[in-house]
Structure formats: structure tokens, C-alpha cells
Amino acid sequence: VGRPAASAARALRESNQFQSNLTRAAPANVKPVGVQKRSASLASSSRAPVALKRASSALSEAGAPKRGPAPRAPSSRSSTESMVSDGDVTSELAASLEDNEKLTGEVERLNTARSQWEERVAEQAAQLAQLQESVEAARRELVAQAAAAASREAALAAEAAATAEAKAQAEAECERAAAEAAVQAARAQAAEASLACTEASLCELASRAAAQEELRRHMHETIQSLRGNIRVFCRLRPAGDEPGCVRVPSGQVEDTVLELLPPEPLKPGDRSSTAQRFQFDHVFGSGTTQPDVFLEVSQLAQSALDGHNVAIFAYGQTGSGKTFTMEGAPGLPGVTPRAVERLFSHAEELAALGSRFTFEVSCLEIYNEEVRDLLAPPAKGADPAKLRLQDLGGTVAVAGLSAAPVASAAEVAPLLAVAQGTRSTAATKMNDRSSRSHYVLRLRIKRQEADTPARESDLYLVDLAGSERVKESGVSGDQLAEAKAINKSLSSLGDVISALASGAKHVPFRNSKLTHLMQNALSGSSKTLMFVNVSPNPRHYHETLSSLRFAQKVNGCLTSNKRGLPGK
Image (cartoon, rainbow, N blue to C red; front, side, top):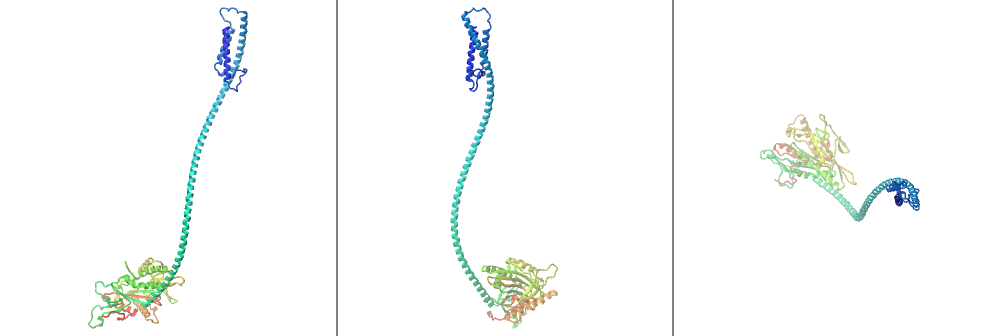
């Protein structure tokens, strides 16, 4: 009994020790069921079942009789004490076992609760980890936002600095602009004052220029009147290799006289064998250039701009150089293109003085006493339209005549080309392309000046048909009728100009369509120039003599030395 009791006692002590450890290890908020001094965490310890087994084993040993020799009978006192002691131990063990069973149930419950707590702790730990991750992500986002905010703040600061710098520059620029504006305003005021002074000077100069222009115009008119409103120039065509029958004597102060030599010497003492002298306003030798010829004509173009009607004729036999004198040749422009160029160039100069000019071009021909418009040629196969001359208040107009406005000399040239292509020509013994009509170019000029009425004038440039006699031209049929009409009109022109030169009371303008058309250009203060073109070829002696006699009739010239021809 002693050893089992000792074992039970030891087991009991271990159980008590285990319970005290369990009590210390149990959570503070868990109370054991039925045992106030023991902890409910005893079930978590692995030694509790061992202690229970040991106690059970000790109780079994104490209750079961042991085989073998019978023990000695204790003394009554010892036996009694032993029995009392064992009974206490047994009851205490039974109580411990009961407590242990309770503790075991409590431990199991606590383990279950612990498992639940651990699961909840694990869940909360997972949630905490997620929260930490969220917090970390939020922290990183906050850091990034802080960095971005810092960057934006830096950018805003830089922008603010740039804005401040730009503002400072703008203010400086405004100050400079204001200063420059003040300088410019001062300059503008000075310029306005200078401009006002200049305008006053210009007005004075313009007034003086207008006065000078009026004086020039008056003096020019005076000079032209002194020279004569009707003048006759003679031009010799080059003779070529053959000796010529016309010559310009040397030693003249101004070439105004020419001599016509007989084609072959006659009997001694025969007056026709001597040279015949003719004197004109000017004589151009065979070596005279186109610019030299126009130099003597250019003043008439100025008279046309000044408001006077001007007519320039080219007279002579076919082949004497009329068309070359008037139209010229490629690279050698004649009177017509040079006069047109002079008109526009001088009009541009006068425009600076306040004069405004407008120009209109008309081209016509007189063929067989019919007036035809060369700028409106008829359709192929149709007869050309006949224009009618009308007397309107002392002036002559051509009804239905085309008038093309022009603004420069370049615009005139194509019109002249059209007119020349339409003009009537035919082959004769004198020339393979003889002009069979009188060609008339009319340039109408309108001049407007401030505070004065507009003035209108006409410049006529006329290339007359060939003046050769019928027997010399060798024509017949229709061309014979053409030649008769040409000679009649030329004779009428000579009569008209002669009457004007002599101051006759009656001038027979209506004797031909040519003189009737030219009435405006031959009347009043008009200026008339007649080019007489002659050929020095001895074969053309009689035609040359006829042309010179016509010029003598026109100009009232005499075959004398009264104009200062050196004597022979």
C-alpha cells in the first residue's frame, strides 16, 4: 500500500503542479469550470493525460491486493493511521480525477476556442496584411502624388519665374515702344511740318510749272507760226550705183535747196539743159537718217498735244520712198511710229503737271473716192462698207468709223498692222506692190486740265497713193480708173493747200473725198507738213519734175535764189 500511495501522491502533486502551470498559462479572461484554483489551459498541456494515468494506476495498485506472502500485521495504531491516510488519498484522488475529467473537458473546450481564436487571428492577420498592402500602396501613391505635386509646383514655380521674366521683358519692351513711339510721333510731327512745307513748295512749283507750260505752249505756237502753218519738206531717195539727176548743193547754211539735172545734155544754150533749182522749208539728202527726218517733225507732235490739228502727208511717185518715210522698215521706224511714241512719252511727262490725256486710233483709206474703215474689214467675199462724211457744226465727221482707245504706243502697233494688211495695193510698171489708195491714220487726242475745258485735237498721218502719170504707170481697166481718181484727189489736195497758203477766201475742200476728210486738219490754226519724196534715178526725171512742181504749188515756192542759195 505504501508504494502505490506514494505513487498516487506523486501523481497528485504532478497534477497539482500541472494545474498551477495551466492556470498561469491560461488567458486572463478564461476561468476553469468547477475548479477556482486551476487554469482552463490544462488541456493544452501534453502531460495532463500522463498524470491522470499515473493517478489511476496508483489507485488501482492501492485497492488491489498484492499476491505473495501475507504482510505482517501492522500495529493497530499504524494500521489505523494508514487506513485513514489511504482513505484520504483515495478520496482526494477521486476528487482529483473528477476535477481532471472536468479539466479535460475544459481543456478540450479551450483548445476548440483556441483553434477558433487562431483562425480568427489568421483571418485578421490576412486582413491586416491586406490592409498593410493597401496602406503601402496608398503610401506609395501618396509619395508619387507628392512627387508629382512637387514637380508641378516646381513647374509652376518655373512658369511663374518665366512669366515674371516675360512680364519684365514686356514691360521693358513697352517702355522701349513707348519711347520709340514718342520719337516716331516727334518725327511724324516734323515730317508733317516738312510735308506741309513741301506741299506748299510743290503747289508753288506746280503753279510755276503750269505758267511755264503755258508760256512754252505760247512760244511754241509762235515759233511754228513763224515757220509757217503749211510747210513742205523734200526727201531724196538714194540713187544707188547710177548717177542721180537730183542733188543738194553744198555750202548751204541750212539745206533748203535742191537741183534737178536733165537726164542728158541738150544743145548748148538750151535752157532746159541747165539745172533747175527748187527751194523748200527743208531738204533731206539721200544720206539722211530716219532720226534726222523725225527731228524736224517732232515739234508738230507737240503741237498736236497742245490742242492743234496736225496733218503730215507723204507725196510722191510709187517707189520714191513715201512708205519708208512714214512707216519705216524693220529696225528703221519712220515718222508714224516715232510720232506715236513721242505723243505718249510727252503726255506722260505732262501728266505730272496735272494734264490727263486719252487717245483713240482710227485707220481708213480713200479708194476710188470711197472711204473705207481699215480696222473693220469686210467678211471674205463681201464688199467693203462705204463710210459717209458728215458736216457737223463746221467740222467733218466720218459716220460709223471705228475708234479704238489706246493707252500706249505698244497698243497702236497691232492696229497699224491690221490696217496695212487691209489696204488696197496692185502691181504697176513703177512697183510690184503699188498703193492704190490714200492711207490715213487718225490719232484723236483729248486733253483735260484742272479748271479748264477739255481740248480735242487730231493728228493725221497720211501716206498718199502714188502720184505717177497714167502713161508712166502703164495701167488699164480698173487700175486706170484708180489712177485717174488718185491724180484727181492729189490735184484737189494741191489746190486746197495752195488756196490756204495764199489766203484765198474760198478753199475747195469738197472737190474730193480726201480734201473733204482733211478739212479739220487743214483749217484754222492747224499745222500741215507735206513730205515730197523724189527719186534721183534719171529714168524717173519727168515724175520727179512733176512732184517738185506739185510741191512748188503747195508751198508757193519759186525756182529762184531768194532764200539765200549761194550763187553759182
